[in-house]
Image (cartoon, rainbow, N blue to C red):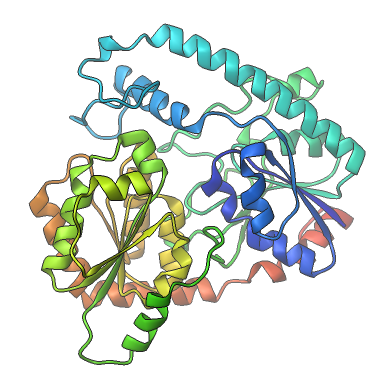
Length: 419
């Protein structure tokens, strides 16, 4: 069986697909990953075969511009949020009037429109040449769904977790902004047409999938390639000591400073609060973000852009910026979480995930220093939240792993249903 993956330039959206790719390859199937050129090395490092024919969109600009437009339209999730960054240079805006929205919007429509037309065309061309039996796509790579429809083969959306196909609370973006489906003589595309959704979400936090069939799967963490650091090995040995200090991991991913800058006070407040609680801290963030924090005490171990799943085996709790990958990775690790959510969708996901009992959510841009201190205190010392995290881990481990989905996907390609 040949399986075509189509992925976007939003790295976090397709990391969840990597383990399924491993499972398919281990079962003897061929997997090709149509991707933007910028993702080539990351996909190659994961052990899958990239096909870098797509034009990647400028995700940083799109994040900033989206925040600006929602601010202008009064559609932000919370009131009284600070003004977003200038989409072009990343500098703080003093007034909304200081940015030429119309020119930027025209530029975005032109550049993005050209890229989307290209991406649909080359994906269809490759699919017709390679003739896959199945297509798996991420939310922002509907080129795969178009190719599947034209080739009359099944397609499956692989959710990273916490995202459905229809959502009243999270803006999933335009569905087919270049009208590619109509251009190829197909009915207009809507995510509500997605028939099959591979979804690792905890049941309490699962998003709506419309009429699509939800396929629960065990989350297998993959946050990039890397080597286990020496201090992580030392920390594993320390776990056996009853007198050891608690260990907290703090993740601040690349999307956080890209969209909101490196000077978010909540991050430094969280660092100080963890140390004040007598815990050790492992920090992983980008180099610019680490530098912006200034001098850090010796009880802070710093890693720059390090794969999260390699650090959590020796952690008692985690603080993060509210993206889906740390939510899901920490859920499988069975540790309590504090999300200092930044983007509007992250705030919604934080509240959604809090329903599991394993996580607490504080919107980072409006939280006070004392609120963060209290949230960290609960994170480190709350036995009830720890028990909820362990129950959540047990729930996820009870799911079928990706390797056990392969037979269902083989049946889907053969007879059109999952059995």
